[in-house]
Amino acid sequence: MKNWINSKKIALLVALLGSISGYLYWNYVGCASGTCAITSVWWRSTIYGAIMGYLLGDIIQNNLKKQNHEN
Image 1 (cartoon, rainbow, N blue to C red):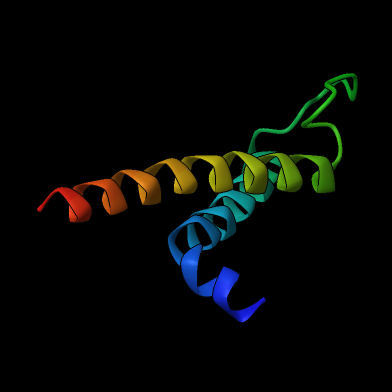
Image 2 (tube, one colour):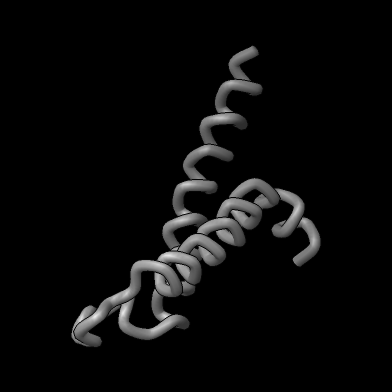
């Protein structure tokens, strides 16, 4: 588990930033009608932000590793 966390530091950091962004989006923009699938409830918006952040962070981390191996 510790090795996995160390190998995914960037992805987990971006996931944390994504979850914060998702919560802030719900808090300040949200969904006035309550019918929005993701942004109508705070925890869905936060989880969605975390998942999108993790995916983005994983792509960034893989590209950085690829560049390091090429040099």
